[in-house]
Image 1 (cartoon, helix red, strand yellow):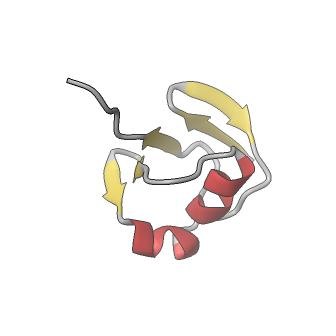
Image 2 (cartoon, rainbow, N blue to C red; image 1 turned 90 degrees about the vertical axis):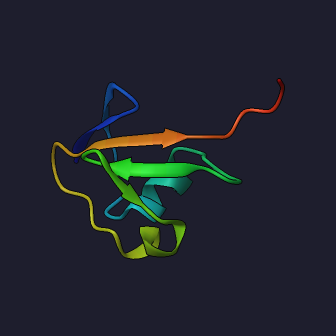
Length: 64
C-alpha cells in the first residue's frame, strides 16, 4: 500500500500503524498521527491504515 510517511511517499506492507512502526524501524517513545489526528500508543496496534494515509512519526529530542 502507498502512504506518505513524514512527508515522503512510501510503499509499505503494514496494515496497521503498529505494524508500520515495526516495518520502518521506529522504536522507543514516539508520537504518531494519521491524517493529522493524534493516535495514542495504546491504539496503534489496531489502527488500520488505508491507501494514501498521511502518517507522521516524531521522537522527543534531548537537549536544551
